[in-house]
Length: 259
Image (cartoon, rainbow, N blue to C red; front, side, top):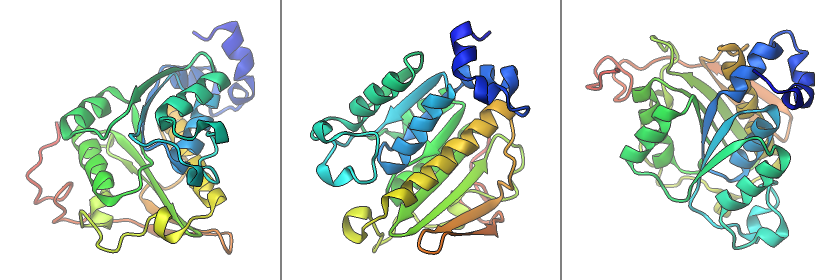
């Protein structure tokens, strides 16, 4: 049940017929694993905490630098040199004191990621490198968990939902889209620059998809698509994803057996 305080705090969401009190209670009882507490993770976590998610698990091993502040909007100038997960946890608790937050201040091993993913209801990939994205995809597929993935560089962003909680995922997995574990010339913010609001838009999309899935057990858009955002022209494009039969993670030739 929701307390009187919680009902008043979230009444504007509860008034939405798609959410209602039942949906708000589902949010309260949910655990979201956020891997990466940069621009994407900041934006997504701020809205998830504000929306009434019961528990957040924040994963990041970095310290805050001055160059982060233009896009990682949960952090203050005085937070420089502080662990990202410590600073973000403090900010989220100030927004919603009722939220339960647990911190992981290191890059997770495969075994630890398996355990954290198993305990979560949904996973947000907010990291900034291909090996980590592939690991998260692989673990979420094995654990049958919904993965919400986003990335941004320059003026461009991309967003996709991989609902591995469904028995059959027509749209395949992240590895179907990007069948490589590394990119020799992979672009990163430190090298190529990034527009802060673009990162925020993609992080907000992750939060919105998570809230829909957790409160209503569905998303109100086609999750079997890759959504691309152009921040210069304010345009979205969507492309259908399809499963690759020889995908090493989710294809019919994969040696993995989903339990």
